[in-house]
Amino acid sequence: MGFFSWKCAKSGVEITSFHTGTPDWTQRIVLLRKDRPPEFGVYDGYGRLCTDEGDVIDFWVELQDAQPGVRYDNLEQPRLVLARLYRGENYEDVVPSRYGEWQGYFLPEDYERQAELLAKACELRVQHTPNPRTFPFVVTVEQIAKDEDLDCDDREVDPAGAYEFMAAHTEDALEQLHSQIPISCLEDFLITAVYQEGPTV
Image (cartoon, rainbow, N blue to C red):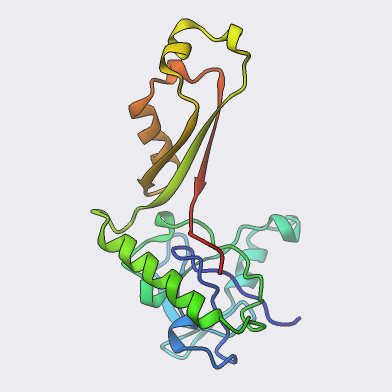
């Protein structure tokens, strides 16, 4: 199998293999696993973390073994954070990482510039957030019933739209929405919470 990789769960920066010659900070990651302490090291490009202690953690194989019978494209993804941007988050504090479109190796010419922009945006966001373990979510509320079928409360509140929250996880973002809009006014609406990692590198 060739190179493959993921994006940092906090910033969206694609994590690179230490074989690429990219800046060290794009390769140094923190692996977050359920009920285990975080592991620090560099990414090798093949689903493995080479730890600072000299061990090799084959975390992608571990994830596959933990999900027998699950189709490859439906497997739970690892939770990886660039060490530069790590602020003590636990497994539950971040969303699963997304696949890296350039496999962590076959990068565009402006990768380093784009990666630096995303990293700085993430750092700035953390500086201006009271709780560094919160992340930007957009919650959309879409009307699914006809106007004439809405009750008076729903028409008066008119909750349809997009709402931005800094939240620790999806449930937290939804709780913030419900603190602003009563649940009774949302029965005829579809609610979707999406983690926003910023522009794609």
